[in-house]
Image (cartoon, rainbow, N blue to C red; front, side, top):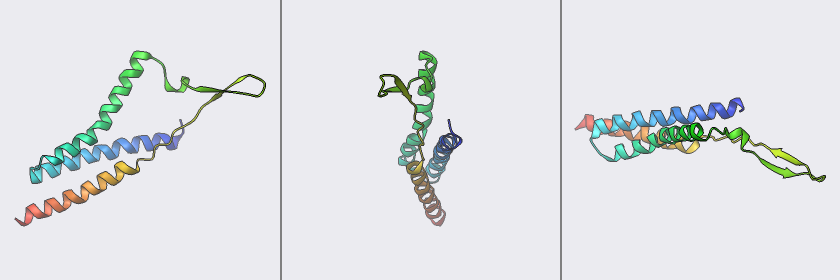
Length: 112
């Protein structure tokens, strides 16, 4: 796995973890239950991480071995391996928007 793919994967979980804390702080400031629902969305990344690890433990087949093959011109099979780069753009935008909403909400509750 490339360093960049690993860094993006770690960044994804850091962003979603920060999203959980932003939602919790906003819920404590405003007592609106919608913040808890958005926080559950951020927690879903960790649920997916846990379920994928359970699947790997049960089946004991790493993803690197699950590769497809292409046929060459002489009939041999050539393994095709691809690395996925998942850039966490949408979670970043979600958490940035939530941070702004939480900051505005905290300012509104401080004024009243």
